[in-house]
Image: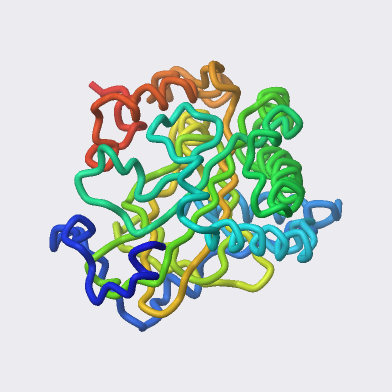
Length: 342
């Protein structure tokens, strides 16, 4: 934000990506983009249509590890208020935001820029605030007190996203042929991190990224975006722009679901592009099992001919991996869990 507000005419060197990693920004819409899955969640509550909707979720998870949802039950007023509060936060004077700055990824509330400003080899064109969000009464007092509406508006959205996550994880468990309550206890006690992101307008969007290619560590990420900017990698390793759909939320499978499904579903690799004219906001509600709870392939999905393809891991293991000297952009955390087939 500080760089954009200062009117820099070009991207400073520390933000310039190697040529092979730069996004190809074209305005043409690929056929894949127009066929990305969009699921009406209200149909889950209609007994005659539930099984068809579960099947749609199964196909979306297998093909993309990703889908968008409409009629998801979060009121548009709650969504709008959360985006408004986020906008007001990032518009605060930099000195105010710096009171929350930290490079310690274990901090329950931290403001920062890039991914980890102190260790990134190339910096990324974003500002963020992350905070633990479930159970809300445990964490909300630590959240920013400025702007005054922030705790209330983002808190209401975080609670609604947590309820939505429970519905989604039930449907995804069911789509794998598991009991829909397979992960119920773990998700109720699980972790929710709200990552509120600001991707300011960028003078040279073809040289930089808001976020590098990665997959999320948790079970699901529910993403609210104010405009287009997210790209996902399809099965042919092509980057596909995720369109902005008014009122829709984005659901991304994380590494925990890939492990739990023993690779039937894959976590989605995604990145964020930036725009020359538009500031983009997103609220990513990152859900995972409790910090120390280990997840492994569901025994019901294993057999003599289909053995466990992944080792078990916990959210804590992921944090240790990222806070160590590991370059998670070069090697995804989940790749360290895969067992050789020999």
